[in-house]
Amino acid sequence: MALLDILLEGDPRLRQKATRVRAVDNSLRDLAEDMFDTMMDAPGIGLAAPQVGVLRRLIWVHVPANYHEDEEPELSIALANPEIVKAHGRVLAYEGCLSIPGWTAEVPRAEVVTVKGLGLDNRPVRIKARGWGARALQHEIDHLDGILFLDRVEDKSTIMQVPEEDTPDAAD
Ligand code: ZN
Image (cartoon, rainbow, N blue to C red; front, side, top):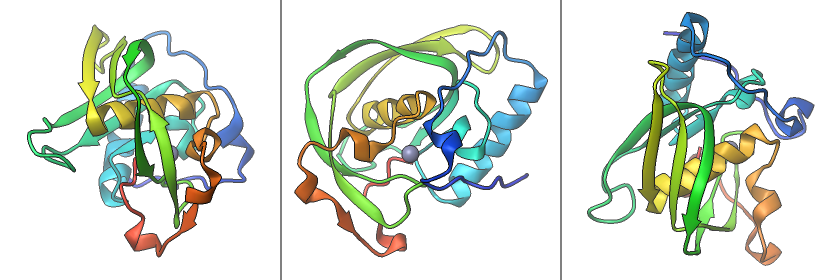
């Protein structure tokens, strides 16, 4: 198990576009494993490779069952080259980010998304997610394009500082 350092806002690597993964190889699988450990340790419900300084299109999302809503299924998946192919609905919720500790704000996101990508076994994956799973996927995919959640805030008056350990609804 290896814990990786999480980059903080202000680091230029968080603003770059990550490059596509040609094929999932052992080094990428090792990175995914370390990212998982880092995400669980933080703790967070998602992590994108650029947050640990690796500019490749790889994300983890790990939303436990019933995370915020009853009957919300667990979503735990690593995806290379994740891409939103369908999105509908719009929901507002307070979100946070491991790269912006101590801050939260209300972020609009699609309610349901269909995402395709490559699994760690290199096979194509297509998943449909809603609720926090959908939110975390959108948040992490944004990281691959250098977009941070504060960029998505429409009502700036909802941006609030909170004790780091209380960052609510941390999306990663
Ligand atoms: Zn984040």
